[in-house]
Length: 63
Image 1 (cartoon, helix red, strand yellow):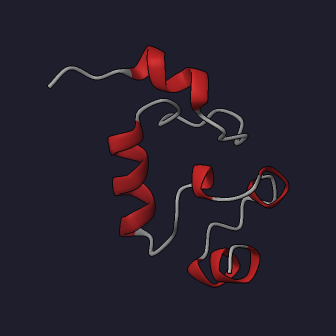
Image 2 (tube, one colour; image 1 turned 135 degrees about the vertical axis):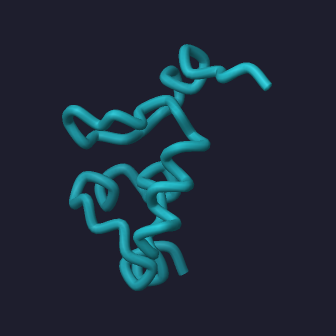
């Protein structure tokens, strides 16, 4: 399967500077899942900017 990084970058909401997974959704999901966290694109913009990717923060902001 071909990676759609260029297409994904148009919609990627990650604001973390220097993120090596920006636009690489498969790698991003794998990384955050391994850490017990949720990718930033699942959060509202203002919450995403806090970089708190915890499940508890997701439940708090996205009931």
